[in-house]
Image (cartoon, rainbow over all chains, first blue to last red; front, top):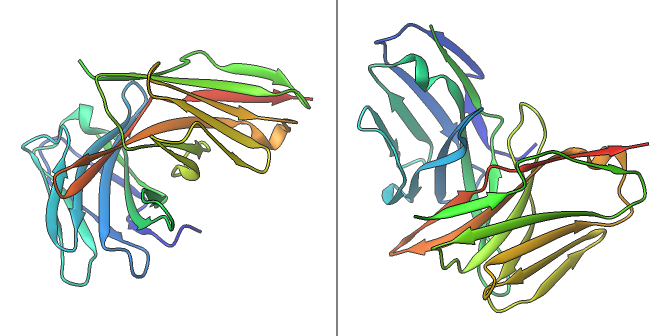
Length: 116
Length: 114
């Protein structure tokens, strides 16, 4: 168990709809990352939040948005869903590695989104 | 363009042998390079991190090398076991003004056979 909790585990919805994925990071971790993993694209970085502020952005679609709340949990909002948005969505939180820098990311179990 | 390339074909090896996985990257200058293991339907699990000024890092049966001139990392699993069968991902930790992008390769699937 990584200590990162994602809900829901599975989500089936229709095209055009909007969904919200939720992530609770490990206790004490200030950073939250969101990734999308589909069979043909691998693990794609979407966005990084640190202590409530957006810090880095990947190829995140305009239809997608995220935020991190004061209690450090994060939500990823996906709107106007298309069939191609079907994927596993992972959240990760990170901790600094002692002695020299770098971070270790702890991943949740993911939310499997199916758009029909 | 920026790329992180890992062997796209699965690697099959016999139990007890050393598995060697490759990660090559272009147009990146990562501060750190990481390796993760991912089992089907589960999130990646951190294995090792190596810094840009380090050549080699070891942890139990795992060894990672990092050549910033060649822009390549090699990941070795010695005395491999069937339980090592999984997909292995390399990731570049790229610092970007206040944040960092942990950018992953597509992974190499390793199968260790009896």
